[in-house]
Amino acid sequence: MDRVLSTHVIVNHRLTSAWLNRVAGAGIPAVEIFCAPQHLDYRDKSQINELGYWFRDSELKLHSLHSPMYTDDIWGRSGPQTHINITDRNKADRIQWVGEIKRAIEIAEVIPFRYLVQHLGVGGQEFSEYAIESAFGSLEELMVFAGQRGVEILLENTPNELATAEGLQLFNSMTHLKLNYVFDTGHAHIGAGIEHEFEIMKPRIRSLHVHDNDGKEDQHLFPQIPKPEGGLIDWLATMELLRTCPGQYPLLLELREVALMQYPLDEINRVFDQLEALQSTHA
Image 1 (cartoon, rainbow, N blue to C red):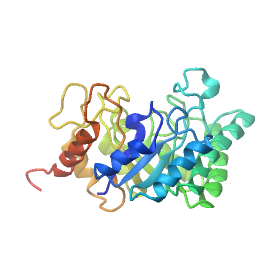
Image 2: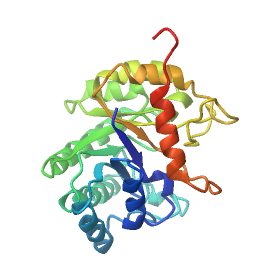
Image 3: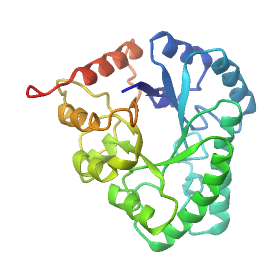
Image 4: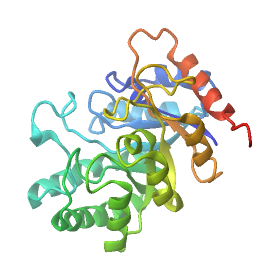
């Protein structure tokens, strides 16, 4: 699998060409950029243009963009009015959120990318047919807008009743959109289990979010082999599952920053190497 790194690993810092230079220098061929105002402000034309100039002269590719989740720069902690939700019951709010996502998609006019990763609902949201109907209307509009810019929208399995593997499958069966998926190992581990969710999503997986956790919290830990305290995912079994669809998606790490880690890109490449080297003894 090709290697891709999400900029989530430095999401609380402004994304600069200097950091992207270090990623390219580490031999990582592509990135997914996380759209968060404190990191990549999709409203800031100067930041987008600066990065656009850099990408045009670099071999590093922008594989995908993670759709914005909040409009503030502190992860929605300034209030629920900052939580971007395409299933919002209030039509005026929903129109506002679709507009926010369109502004992010417009980045493709400056920096081409293949996929937009989109959440269906927000954390802990309960299932309702109204939410499905609202999401359908939002996504139908967003798909047209994205398609005009060469972008495909992917839905991610997330910890709420709408976006489990079964929830995504139900959404596709209830609509004609037939969207493809991002498979998130950490979210599946918190939910019904990696193997269970992978097998349901498998035919439509086009990208990954690979990270570890304790099975309770969405920690975005570095996968470690052997497992340390904290991360509990069985990476041998997980990699055997992921290898069953060669060429269907890249190996994309979506990690959280470790404050005292002196050389994070070296550690990230070590994680890539270890995951790729994992083989069962009977393979």
